[in-house]
Image (cartoon, rainbow, N blue to C red; front, side):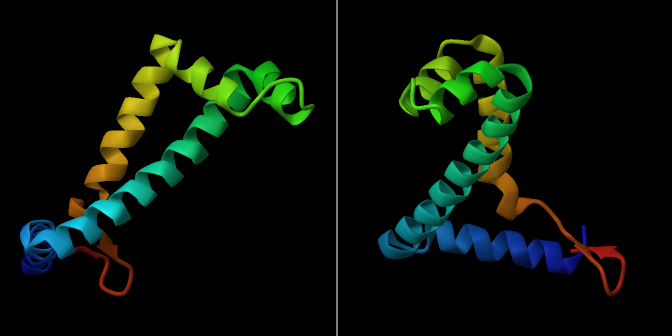
Length: 105
């Protein structure tokens, strides 16, 4: 563990527990990050595994909400969505590699 990663954890934890306004902002950013990650990854999963559902939405034969029903109705899709949710929510706490020094921060 290096000091930069510990500072990052302290900063994120401080933003989460620093009061109602900072916690609300942290949860808002986390919600947007999770929604974006879910939309992108589940689009790719559906494109790979259930292209008929996507083409029905593209052709106007089905609603976008039918994709939500497809994801919620399948245990495999729910598991993938759960993993994406967890990773996207915990992303600020994970260390990053500094390209200049080639070290984890």
